[in-house]
Image 1 (tube, rainbow, N blue to C red):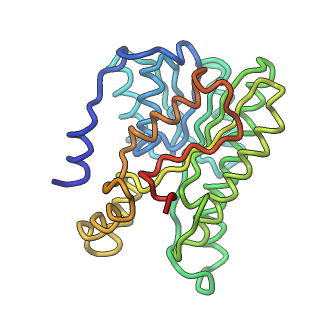
Image 2 (tube, rainbow, N blue to C red):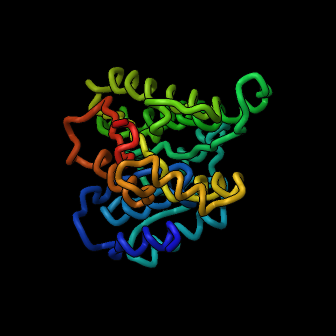
Length: 274
């Protein structure tokens, strides 16, 4: 059984409109929402009643995410967004405010893995590309989301870091650096905006069955063997699903986590316990 089949067999997907409506009427922007964890976050936020801004550079896949949400009775619009371009972020978020309303929630999910080479073989362009998306992108999106949240003294920002924002491994140095920085940025912004009614938390997934991990497995030549190795890395004996991460993200967006800010929600099948 493939990891994808294993995931779908274990975790059912009830249609939108079932379950608690903990984000009813709130506007939530999700970056990197065309596929993987971002797509799952957008779908689950809509299921919780949110009006979702599906933000990504992948237009066809992003529109499919919107169609899925709308067909199930939710509300969503697609916005083409390159998080590494400040003017694009500024203009897209302004359009979200005009069309859907001021942001209550932001999920900073957009990210790339980048070059898998040791530090002494990396080029400046390798470093800059990853940090531009994974770190500067979080800064830009947070900056312009906060400008909509501050007048309402209310909001929740969820930053997708990684297990590799907590521990490291001997590969992809720029990726690990970016995710560690996101972890500390989260805490700084949590302190800066706590008295303004805005919460900022980070989520730290283990290996999740997403296109990023699937491409990583393919790049090593034997995807089945790679997935077998990844399963062994996690004490629970499997990789996670995008929906499992989305459940944690929506919890942090919702009032169920109202006394949490600056926290690290680790969803990693026990990886970092070792």
